[in-house]
Length: 155
Image (tube, rainbow, N blue to C red):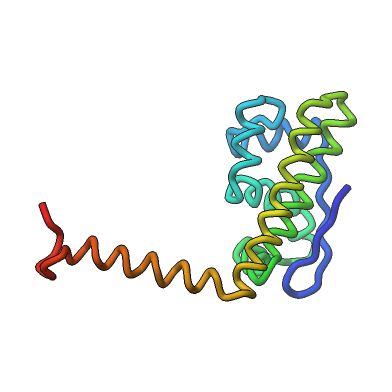
């Protein structure tokens, strides 16, 4: 079982079992034991958060937290990422329990890649490079939209 904290400091537990994987397959149309679906989930924050949401749904009901409030609790700096990583770590553990070593290693590699990318993004933000890149991209888009004569998109 893995856990994460929401923006109010509440701890949520994520646990995958074969039964849960079957239930989630019915609800989301994604089978975590299908290699294509597994890759899709690893590549989609939206899909990972959908799994998180459904895996903590019963806990939310027990705490009298409705779906909208639960969604808001996932908002904030790093909360969605933390929930996503907790889900992936539980997914890795699930694959290990069922002897699916390739899927477990792929999931671990994905977690490590996400963590490196997030650290690099934080560095770029802290250094101001993201702002500079966005400013340059905005200038390029404006130039494309206005064209060289300022009359709008060229044909």
